[in-house]
Length: 175
Length: 324
Image (cartoon, rainbow over the protein chains, first blue to last red):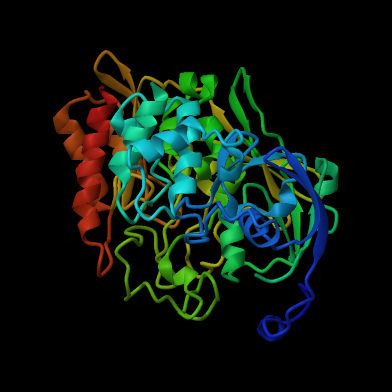
């Protein structure tokens, strides 16, 4: 496109805005909570949208959809990530764990138990993300002080302000 | 988000196949996916380079080489980084959240776009997003904007913390283009000032990618500090950040490094203050003088005059912190 005059190129880019190309699909096999899912996904779909809209695993929440709130936190290969900024197309070969995969049957994960016991939530919307992040926070060993817990949980916002209960839950599990 | 084709490049030789203006590389995706959601970035094709580009950190006799795919979180725990270049680890920890650091790549950190609110608001004029449309921040909400090195075309700042440490540590960026040839770009020359072309963030050649970052051996692993001032205690972009490092012999400053984030379109080095400190005693009086030299270089905009004093204080505090 280098030979095209810049004015023509600008016009082309402006006109292009009005024409949405057809959607592109991609076949995927993704392991979620140790179960393989084989499906065809829009290349644009994020892991969060795939979980919620296609697989009806609605535990992971959409707060901001821009990586600012942490409500969509899940684990990929055991590490906490934001599912709203993860493209589904990049996940084959990796193991995804969501809040639905944390409990062992009817037996809740210790972090889930702790959140209930310590009032780690009020409205509950940020809670799945908080719990996934909290499990990782303990696993990473970032629990030596309240300040350290707060720093390493700063990617998860709670509009109700249940932070004290969340810190307490993490301390309880870390013991 | 506009539709795009998606392909994964299994190795470096396949990365550049079909690479043109409409094709973009994706690594961590923490910035790109967001930009695509807002239609600020509209690639027609995405190439996943997470397997093709090295994710290894290797020590050699000249220093350390960090593969562009090394995740930000790895830089905060890698034993060799902590031993030889702990300033880098500190700076990375000051940025983003644990989730984002787990995702974001080293190369991507360099290439992330500004967080200037007008760049993200597609209903507003922004020369970086749409060349020639004007700069809304120049006389608008510019509290977070630059105080040095800006132009009438753009007052945006580079958002990275990692890059502030890398410019302080005289790093080099190894880039590879379509011809599969690698070349080195000194870190201080990698990012650009806005000038008349604010849509260009950096000097990465067209269709090239970042392969690795190299940091030469240095003696800045004992007396260093990364100080970041922001609107909340964690998980916020810098109003001002300072990377400071001193190479001390007894109490004499053999060499000094001072760099800042949140002040310019690129990670900024304070060369005059470094020159002043070199050869001097590490005293509060000299730190104060260095901070004054920095503050005198600053030209705030209509809404960020506070950054001048804030910066002066941050420089002085960071230098003090270097003494432990």
